[in-house]
Image 1: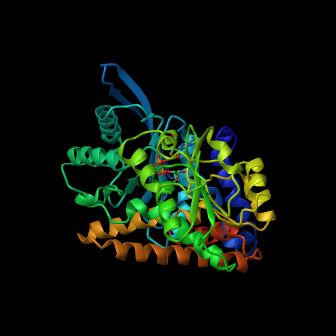
Image 2 (image 1 turned 120 degrees about the horizontal axis):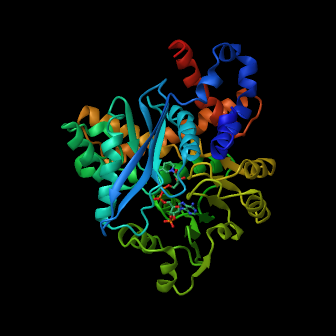
Length: 434
Ligand code: NDP
């Protein structure tokens, strides 16, 4: 529609999915008859709201909040909240759209949604973060609930923000509804292994791809962008499997350590001290910091795990990675590769794990958190991690199978889109024109 013309990220995500579905529509005319695509690209509900708050100096500030409730055919809306100055309706819609298929792929009963705000958490005090998140939740609480819509974290929203939002939701509702948010602290209803789930899941997925070619993480070199929640735990699992991490980044630049990144330093700097990644080189003399995060893809590596943000690998970066002999890409972030970059990887037979499959581990464990909350139980770390591994293997196999069935063997982009789509489309048909 013309009214969507400015929503470039959303259109990019839709194009990738629709291109993949051409053979599915040819074989299944019922999807055309029931206008499934036309309905699927239109969110069931888009909520946008004012978030006023007061900074530490007493100034009144205003940000914009969003929640896009995209599709509830197979379960309550589920998807994270992003706090970043770049957030706008297009970004939230692309993330919400992707979430529909990702959540379907997990095999868990969860629909698709996403939300957030253009609030910039960088440089804010704890109390400013608290006042902002309370104001945000005062409005959002009207639209969510354990059986309605269950938000979680994303860029700029971690355990601290989830904690403040949970407190405010409880106050607004006057009820302890543990299942309204996921990514909670383990002391009050959070699931063990949720923090690790997206990063670990990405590595489990890439490991399946590597195994299919007789390869493994052992003794391979890995470059991981970002140094947030997804990146840290992708690095941790890759190292556990015997890989050497050469570099990681944040929005200001990247650190290259030829001896292998020391994860304890990264964790302390990022998770405890809230510092910039450039500080790393002060403690590791062999390492170098380069300004500008995009340059990280110049580093030759066997495996690249983009875990920071959308469109961080463009065509040129993809060509560089290929020229330097990259064997596998695992998208830990959402839509980190542009459409042109994806084509470069596929044309050059690089193993490619697309985001909606490769990073589905986070939301899968969020669904397991919801299950534990409903049952008022807590599972052990190993129990959750075991289920995560099984889910990632299933997603890989389902995507592979769909790709083969529709004539593009090995193309996991198409396979994941199709495998995620069919279940939602069939549910929509059974539920009538709504
Ligand atoms: P965090 O906020 O914990 O970390 C994000 C990291 O990426 C930081 O190092 C940040 O640097 C960097 N980054 C963020 N925005 C940009 C940008 N515009 N340019 C360059 N660098 C940037 O977020 P997460 O790790 O949770 O999320 C990372 C990605 O993974 C996102 O695409 C998210 O949607 C996706 N994802 C996350 C899931 C989860 O469970 N958390 C689940 C599935 C997907 P800086 O600190 O300097 O901003």
